[in-house]
Length: 425
Image (cartoon, rainbow, N blue to C red; front, side, top):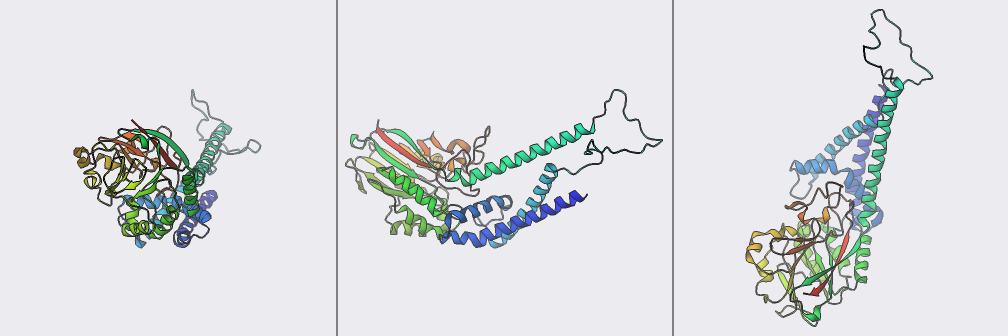
């Protein structure tokens, strides 16, 4: 009974500590990250808070209590209270399993055996054909189960730490070659670098974004294409992230489209920031790359680079992006959300698209052996998780992206700077 009470108190105190930590991270630490204070350390603090508050976040999301994609003040209070209850119950159950309370007669050491008084009406010690199990065997089995649980918890904590602090910042450069029908010989070998889903915010530091941009510049790509979702959770990150993106250097130029998070936190503000930094946005627009490797708005031979608005929060106008492009001109299309490839109007239009470049799904962020990536923000499941897939109207390439949302973790799905070299077909 004493052990039961101590475990219960520990679970309650731990749940209270989680609540205090989450509150401090959300209301005190997160605003400091937007100001650039100790970005690497503070983003680690807020990342852990995001993991700890996930049970409550999942509850209010499933209960449809959030105001769209925002967690208002009142809903935040509900989330924290529910989160504390969930953690208290979960910790109580975990402690009960990992450190089972002693039971009468089961964990008595062999050096000090317990002698029970005999009663006249006592039942026989064993029935016919039954062999009683020694106390030491039962105790060993309970200890084995408890030790196994403790090792499982330690392993889970280690994997979570690795996913949150190491792999989520361990970006890689992937290289692919893709044939483009009709690509002029002068553009053979054209190299593009795609950056997507940077998600600068309380869980990702500006120092990390600078590392990504420095690595991208070292690639000396001809074109750098940005496919949306540059911020996370606050409009305060729009100006900082676009300022960092203005440091990108390509031989020909940098082009961009917006994603759903950019519209959530302020589409007009995002457009102004890109205009101020002279990074062209081609949402529902296009630009041509001529054979002498210059960008022009006029119709020309060469390569058409088009873009559509975000499929969730904007209008994806395929006709505005691609109409009146000469049929013999190859074209690539930027769309933040790969679900746009399944749009019935686009499929029926028969508009030529040689390759659609997308992001949005983050590769699923977490890969589980035997299950794959169970959570992919797409209506078509794992089809558009990552990599090159065939859509109903055109091939679609989905980059794993740079940042994260909701759970700031990646496991077996590292961040990616995608490099594609186009060859004449």
